[in-house]
Amino acid sequence: MTQKKGFIDVVVGLQWGDEGKGKNIDELLSRGSYSAVARFQGGANAGHTIKLRDVTFIGHIIPSGCLQKNIELFVGNGVVIDTVSLIKEIKQLKDLGFDVKARLYISNRAKLVSYLHPFLDQADEHRRNKLGTKIGTTFRGIGPAYSDVRARRALLIGDVLSPDFKEKESTLSEFHMNFLNMYKEKYGFEIDLEKINEAKEKWREAVKELKKLQICDLSFLIQKRLREGKNILAEGAQAVMLDIDFGDYPNVTGSNTLPANVCLGLGVPHNYLRDIYGVIKAYTTKVGGGNFPARMEDQALEKLFQEAGNEFGATTGRPRMCGWLDLFALRYAISLSGANKIFINKADICLSNKIKVVIGYKQGKKILEEFPLYLNKVTEVVKEEIPGWGKANYGVKNKQKVSKELSSYLKYIKNKLSDLSVKIASVGTGPDRNHFFNWDD
Ligand code: IMP
Image (tube, rainbow, N blue to C red; front, side, top):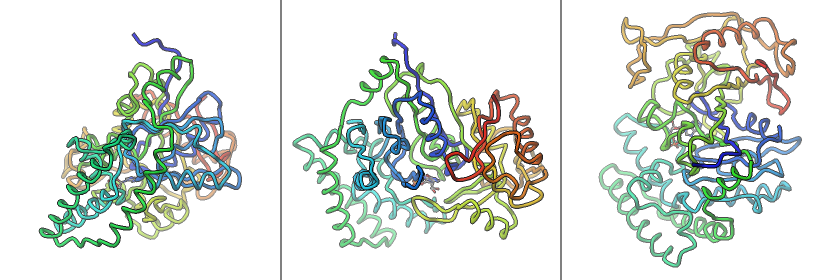
């Protein structure tokens, strides 16, 4: 039986990503009860913007706690690591005055994203585009990297330290090139050898740097920390609605984003898990393919939300589609994740006197009870209209100062989720670290 002392809390997005989890993670870490933050899935498809006083850092692989000097940073076995991005982030942080090398630990069982994975990602999107089924991936090689993991031909991070790494790498690259040639012959995908060689050079340089980092049996280290009574925050990337098993397949990412994957992605038993913090925005955004039932009908209003919420991808720069809060999808995400505390971000962004909330999905005349297998079969949504609050709540830091419209919106949400035993922990009212107020006590 595991000797339990410390615990793991988890932060996950409950929508389609970009809920602003980095800010909540930063706030949770600043409470002083965690010694480390750990990534357990995903790769450089994630992009979190972290601000500390006049410092802004956009991270993709390095966990969000990097700007807090006493926090250990763990990258678990469930992560597919873009080495070039990782090394670049370490350098950027150093230039900003944060030398993270001594507190960064990488699992020897994490997987390498190879220099050809992003090309394979593009090639497969090219193929899907011809079929009219484009996913809109981030082109970070996530799908191909996880495919290699499942096919048991992936390169592990620990492999870089072994003498036969070069051989393993060239065998895999040859295999990938065959694939790329197939995409060229069958689907007319253009292979740019110059770009590939450039990527190979950069990748090989980055792998040399990777070898100098702390590569370890991270599961062992985490369990040691837990036995020492230290607590860890597990940082989800993407979000529940992009989970490979429970999202709108195939418009999903390559990993399981649910908190259940924390155990597998870090190598810890489930009985260490404590609170599950679910993060949402007061509205919804989505990037990439697939149906988005809650999308705003009014394109001009959608554009206003995009601008006010800075809804452009931190990884790709793509504009995000904006929609109303989707309580039907949210109930599904809470049920799957077991979230017991919720952060509601960007509640200052409302922009209209009346807002809508999606409370159900319809297929023809039928109101759905269960979340559908295919989102594109949803023909209509059931909405409710409630009063909006314009710009009234920007920067509010105190529950007592919240406008009555936002206050009733929060009570409305709480009421709609009352059977799911969740608490609204805090509500974000602006981009700064202290732009939030606590709601439930
Ligand atoms: P991939 O993860 O790059 O394979 O992309 C698969 C789908 O997940 C696409 O629709 C992406 O737009 C979406 N996606 C991946 N990462 C993020 C993220 O961090 N935020 C929002 N969407 C994401």
